[in-house]
Length: 207
Image (cartoon, rainbow, N blue to C red; front, side):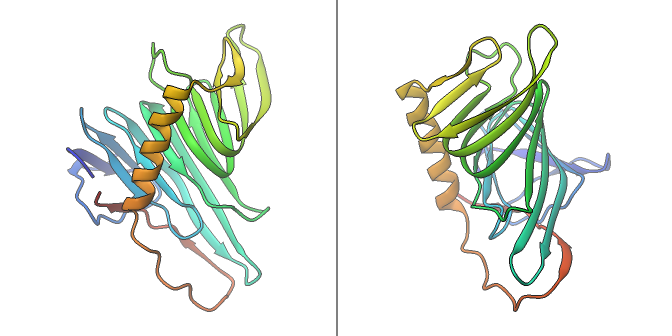
């Protein structure tokens, strides 16, 4: 964590965010100017960096250990600001979605950046690795679904569609993703397989 941030759960009191805080479903994190927060979502779901002046809601965070594999159900909402992510390869039954003002992105084994800042000149999505399935509203109001794959790195903007990412933008995204990943603590040893449903516990990490 750099700078400062606050958090609240289900409309409750707003509190300062500290390194090591455990967050659950229903939590909203808001970062200040010149501040970032890294959220470790666990062994299966990877790490998320919330960029400065951003709002990220943790709508749903669940792990289901079936014995054969771990099913992940993550739903995040980014109404404003930016987030960088490094999501591990997920089982076929898993679901990892990010809601933004103009659509919903499903990701699998993916690294990149989502941008929901109004009037931003940056692309809405920059994908470094993996796959993103995006359902979004076009400028004309039509709902369209498309699939992005990388490498090579690609970007998406509603008015331009998918195209090759600019090298300068890739450099920035790689640095942010790598920094967030390195800051994440090593996950604990997995327990013996059993069928359970439990919350994922995002832990704020120091970097």
